[in-house]
Length: 605
Image (tube, rainbow, N blue to C red):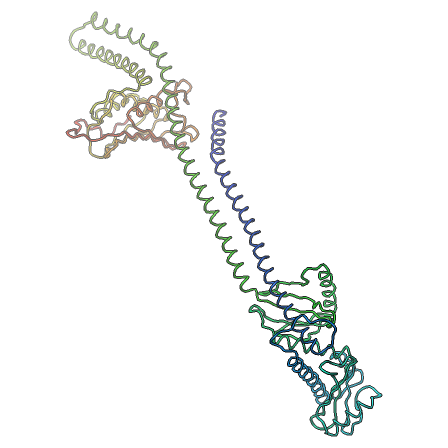
């Protein structure tokens, strides 16, 4: 049991050692693929950051350009000592100033009409609601007058100049009255704009202080800039927001800021702007990039510019890079798997060669053991054989006898002499096989060999209550063998089967003549061979009998191997064993034989 345990341990160690290089290759391949994936992912992030950075710069320059246009228009409405950013040759000063003044007036008149419509379609205004509306519209006040010029809604007292304008509008002498400009610029201390109500029932006046009027000038300049600027192809929307996050003007669909969000962005962007770097805040959303930046001009109202740029082209590039990473990683994995498969194939081939060398080494070890055993046995066997031979010769000469007794006597002495000579020859052949492996091959009938084996073993079979049976298939012919050694191998195998059937049984010997091989199959119904012993039964020192020496199957194996044949064993405990011998028998022209002796009958012991 300890020997079997050590063999199992050695086998497990060999299996583990054979898998170790394959495991190393698998780990290294996986590690390289993982490192490549990490590096490729980092490169992808760098590419993505570069592309997003380029898109951010485009948005920043677009917003900056938009701000320049807005400031330019604002300076055409508001007198300032600062030099403008630069004049656009497409917008001459005089024509641009006149045009933008008209646009400012249009903006305020439209606001007045909106408010008038709100009052006309609603239930009227309370003082608080009117004040709240004016604050939201960046107006100093809103005044409603009836058809006689009397004040309906608004604060009191009303200056005389405003009352005169209201009466003029209510009487229908004018449709629109305004006091907004001093020369080409808006008034510093504010002004007003008034309209006559469409149904002639009075007038509406919007009052603006200086800051309010400058805000409306800025709103008009922004709207003007958004109309004039050539947009980048990736631009989805643009918007200007005041300090409270309310929309001043926008193109496309934007989203207003909460007041606290707008204040926080102003504070954050002011800090960045103080460092001298590009002051903007970017945020990636689904399919687009949003940038928010302050307009860094002191004389304009504090505003935030917000742009949204499409990331469709950027995402296409990122998607292609991601696919490239996946394909490259899969390629590396495939290369690793191919290397593993190649290593596995080479390792199996190496193991096969190692097994072959191991078998040759075992064979050499068995031959060496047989040689040592044979050298000792030769001396011990030859002396008794010589004594027996001399005794038989003396008996044959000194006790001739007469009649029938003489014939029987001569037959017995002849058999003894022949068997003694055969034993002596077997000893010599055994020694020759264990040292040089030389055979005396010739073309012989396997039927004769089988018949002789059955004849010699029949008495033992009768004693052991074993029934012998022989079968033959294929086309019988002479084969190139050493008959004595084949006979010895078969006898050793059959006697081993007798030992496995102590209570009797059956043994079938089947011979099949194939095209290139002669197959001898010996099957018994004995107790079988344990699986743990199958690899050791041909070792010279292995035996399961108390008085055995373990030479029988070892000699049989060496004889079959000397014929370039193979011997295989199939067995299971308590289900018998089958020995299958394959010997190559090439055909030669002119050689053939149909045996005269038929051994295809059954013998019962």
